[in-house]
Image (cartoon, rainbow, N blue to C red; front, side):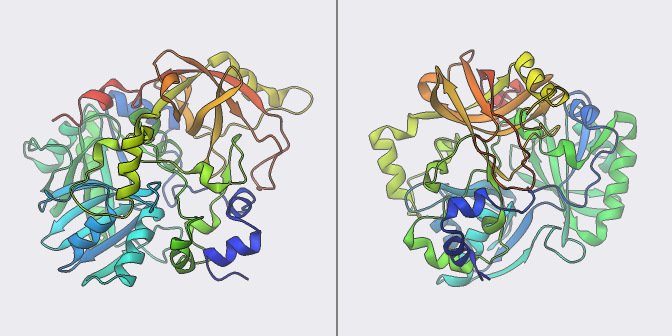
Length: 457
């Protein structure tokens, strides 16, 4: 039995086979009720009233404290940390030595020399590895998500979002909410407990992310629900939760670019045989034996605005070369709005004789953790479609895609190939046929507010 990722790759015969044939289920939101009402109404609520997202169970927390904490972050982040005061957060993004994305998280500056990274495992693992193996005077504690953790989380974490979010916060705190800039932090008293709060907006509307020690969870959660009752506050279940990224334009799960570089072999040996990067299934209509063909750059993901060459970090020289040779503008992240007739025909094929299209899970259509579908124009691949699901707000199947810049103009018609050419052995892949579904290119984020307003103030 392999003891780490490196050994698992060797046993499988390569990283692509390891992930393509993985028998693990796709990542989900654990320990959160799948639907509090129904996922359609829960989606509609984040545009119409206000919603409560429970983020306490599906992300990992890595707390980093010590005199070298900021140096560690600076050595790994494409972001500048020249201005990073206490009570501010950043979207931390890390790349490998060749400039390809490993992952991202939200990094909170909690106290002097104390930071907390919150996100899915790839970037958390990368930071954790360097913290414990590098020459850094730091202490770390980690709380994994509820799929891995025994017992309750260390902290609760909620978001109140939507047009009525400030009304809910006003009622819960008994005070006028402060006007904070995006990704700045404050403190509230809710349910008699001190609560830390980040000005955020996952649904493309003003709102706050709220957290504190788990022992305060029931008091704070109950107070939020009581305060939100008159404003139509709707709890969002695990099924609808992931679909908000389709409208806000954040691409959550790029394949971490860690599988091929010999310089990263020690890191692959550090990652266990049960690590997220070892077991997560890869799927979709895009197929390449070379796992590096799945890697994405920060420019592909619209993180070029975060890249700062004011400090040395892993991958800096590679990103500078991408800017110099034009690769930083070669691709663009977009939203694809799938053709309703084509999507309906594919989804309805299971009711007809013969093989049908790959089943669409709803509202998130994905059957894997890392998903890559071919995007074509006139039969030639011009990009990949990734995060895919149904939006009741748009009454459409949507996906977030990275396409050639020449095909990124809103209104451009493309084709998404859905299903595997030769179905893999993944447990969630049934015998099916590939289908081609027309789609229209639109901006990412698709929601106008998410694109223009909620980060601007």
